[in-house]
Image (cartoon, rainbow, N blue to C red; front, top):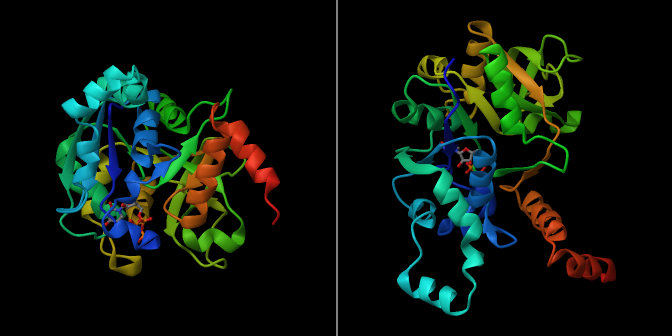
Length: 293
Ligand code: UTP
């Protein structure tokens, strides 16, 4: 069985929910406290044992993503050495030491499915992870990071495995929703996936929060998928084909998940990561409780 060593991070979307900032700053570079979302995601990949990260980027405008992983300037290194604050770059250096990072270009934002297909030659004939560039996952103490869990299920079953979370029925139209064979099981076998269904058409309330492990067969199905909802090549449609042929599993997410591509989700993530920060947390808590709302 081949090990899951590579991850694709689609980051070629337009980020319209975060305009005007995303006109010149990629949303993956927006900070959660002082780390860009991209570094939080890269740390999650390292904790799951991933060795190579492939960023899917547009032809222009996201050069800062790869650039972020390059060495600091001589001036910055000298200043950090003089002030004995080299620790400020520790988290970045740990990732640099563990992950090989490169990018592939998606010429046009033709949907998440198309973004994944763009990574085909970089992935080759291997299983791989997909992690969305605007979804954060936090594993509370005693919980295994969801991506690590997905890789374990893949290794036990040899089947592509995706994370799912339960959402209220009023929100099923915002997500890809799975049709499980038996929703009491965990992992559950997936029968089909529907992109952004209406409440009436939703086969369950199990939604996809943006963490996947696929065998390379997903590429064949993406190639055979026509543009679906919104004229985009939907990953959900290819996942349905995968479920019908090779098989697809879904694992219930027990980690905390933040939609950092949405304004409210982004602010919540900053508050909660800030509260968890040993230096900042107590002061932020005091400030929040002093607010007269
Ligand atoms: P979203 O649709 O949530 O993000 O895609 P978006 O298009 O960037 O943002 P909004 O909705 O306009 O605010 C989910 C992820 O898939 C990537 C996005 O970058 C995002 O991380 N994506 C989407 C691509 O890489 N290529 C695409 O063609 C579409």
